Image (cartoon, rainbow, N blue to C red):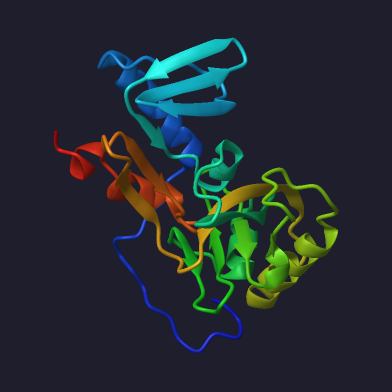
Length: 231
């Protein structure tokens, strides 16, 4: 039950994906297939020359091919600086809702919702019963000069605007406390479509970036190196 709406479309096939849990669950599957995973090993620099030399804090790695899947952080490696830019998105979560609070805001048995306005507002409720909400106005997002990927500055105005949008849709939640607030970095392209493909003469640089806030779902169904280069 959302105040101020004129209609809605229900998708019975919608669902939820927790991005962090998805990555953690994929780890043992990949290890079982022989994939080597090096955690806490950020790539600081990439040098090209036939193949690729990747500089990390503890040494260098030689690779015949690489995949750029760093989305909003890609400019840190000097790739796609003119093709996409990092945008900081602010989100909050409430305390776990009681059955009475769910009833007060009209949250019944569905995964979440989003509106169709220019700055999409979206909300979902994971299994722990917290309500997560983001978007809804220009104040919900921020760009930092020079394509900075780490957000520095006050977020109070942004979170105040997001909270007003949420309480406008669900005024019954006025007494529900907000317990978590965070900011994440999106990769935004100018035409709002992802960049997916392969380049260089040897067709050995694959890229899948620019999901414009929809990467948790799009990244899992759009990109496969085999599709870009079957050889």
